[in-house]
Amino acid sequence: MPVEWITSHAEVPYPAAVAAMEERVAAIRAGTAPEAVWLLEHPALYTAGSSAVPADLKDPDRFPVYRSRRGGQYTYHGPGQRVAYVMLDVSARGRDVRRFVEQLEAWVIGALDQFNVKGEIRAGRVGVWVQRPEKAPLPGSSAREDKIAAIGVQMRKWVSFHGVAINVEPDLSHFDGIVPCGISDHGVTSLVDLGLPVTLGDVDVALKRTFGQVF
Image 1: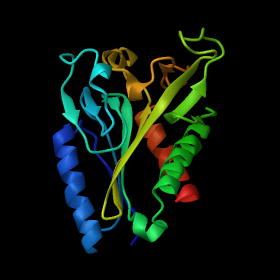
Image 2 (image 1 turned 90 degrees about the vertical axis):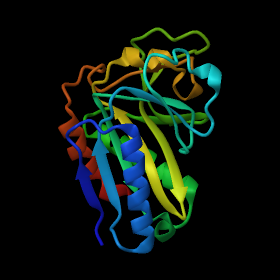
Image 3 (image 1 turned 120 degrees about the vertical axis):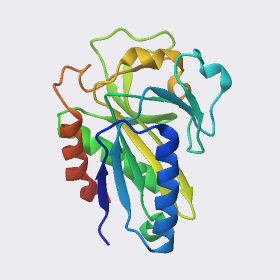
């Protein structure tokens, strides 16, 4: 069966999204539903992945904080950020988790390329990054690179859920309440922050256009 694309136009509460993903993952595993990519926004919140360090939550009272079984550390979700939850049968795609994460990275990089944005991967730093030579480096870094997309996945019986989050036009000050993904010597950016008049709908088109090139 082809992958089903689902788009939610209203903000989806995080607990409701997790419950819906778990239900869909079980159905995919049972063979009663096709694989799916779910495009959505969340209200402003922080999530703590399986490797989250408590000290990285700098402002615990700013937004709701949810524990997550996805990989990674603290991250922010909120309006203006395109979240793409991927519920895919990785057992039919090689049973290689590392390769699957690399495919997610390549997918995001391909989508950013649609807007002439060069996304890059860095060893030891999860997510997708863009170079910012016009900005001064942050303390502890020799060159300024800002994160534009986060990646965190979970597997259940070789079916994936959670996925990627691309910063389109979020309030970047909302990231100040955490150390995003445990990285303090680089910044966070978005497509609009880079000077591009891009909408969530534009990003959806790019994600759909490039998905088949990677998966």
